[in-house]
Amino acid sequence: MAYCATKNISTQGLSVLVFVLHISLVYCVSTSLPSVDDVVIRESVVIPSTNSEQEAKELYDQALKQYGSYGAFARNICSTWENRGCQCSGGVEELALSCRGVGFEEIPLDLPSDIVKLDLGDNNITYLPSKSFDTVPHLEELVLSDNTISKIDSEAFIGLHKLKRLSLHNCGLTVVPGEALKRIRGLTTLQLNGNAIMELDGFALKHLKSLRTLRLEGNMLQKIPTEALIGLASSLEALNLGSNHLFSINEGDFPLMENLHYLLLKRNRISNIATGSIGNLTKLKVLDLDDNLLSAMPTGLEQLTNLQEL
Ligand SMILES: *[C@@H]1O[C@H](CO)[C@@H](O)[C@H](O)[C@H]1NC(C)=O
Ligand SMILES: *[C@@H]1O[C@H](CO)[C@@H](O)[C@H](O)[C@H]1NC(C)=O
Image (cartoon, rainbow, N blue to C red; front, side, top):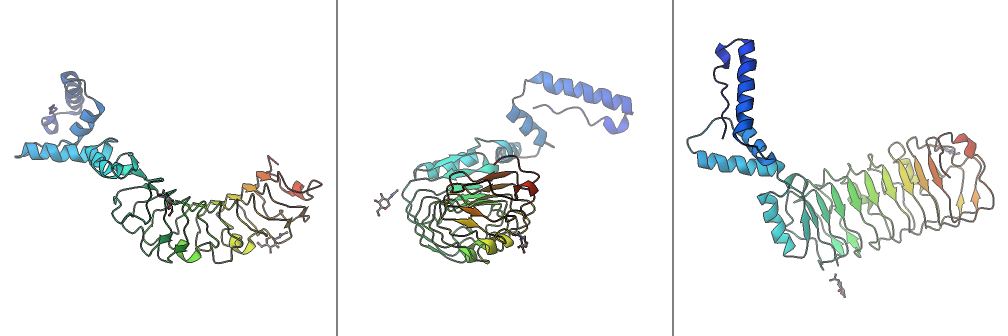
């Protein structure tokens, strides 16, 4: 271990200080060629303690916790879950657990509290009870896709203060769980695609003031969910309404949405787009209308000055 000779500094002039630092640097480097872990651990060393062995261990643990992508701590957590058929990756700061298709019938109660990403897709989870995730407060991404979820308690998502991305793709949902979603206000991406949702009321997404991406493709919507969009008007950037049962776009369907860049409407049965009905989407860059029943170019697109792709 290199203790660089800095204790003289206070009594020396500036040029000496530079000199001393220079010498010590040379000394530190020349004693050994440090690996990244060495440097990290050495930088944490301040004063030798009376119990240097204990301190070394603490510093080592601290460094692992902070930097060790394959740290012992994470390895410990991971091996427990790998025995249950899951995959585990990342360091403690971004621990990700994927338990796809392992046959869980419930949300596990003993999830490691440090996880940042959790994938419970393709299991047999049918019910999300109250406080399903309140032991994992660092979670930023939660995937529940490919389960058949028939009931979501209104307090199921309580405690997920950091959650940014939620996937409920292909979960057999017929309604949007508005009460439950109310608890995750920081959400930026919501996947509700591949369900059997027929309508969204004004309450469904009302509290998701940070939502930027909403995927609703592959549902059974017969009209643009105007009421739900009003609440997202200032945040939403991408909206996918493809593969639904939409047949016409009417005036008033889209509220003023100043940040919507992507609107995907492909694979519907749209035969009519009222003039000016998308004029409120002033920032639209991409409008995808493939595979619809339009016989002519919709009129009123010339107002959309940012449009790059149609
Ligand atoms: C889910 O349950 C069904 C029937 O109850 C069973 O056939 C299937 O294997 C289960 N899936 C998993 C991943 O365990
Ligand atoms: C534009 O949005 C406003 C509300 O934001 C709405 O009242 C109006 O009907 C919309 N215009 C069109 C042409 O859809």
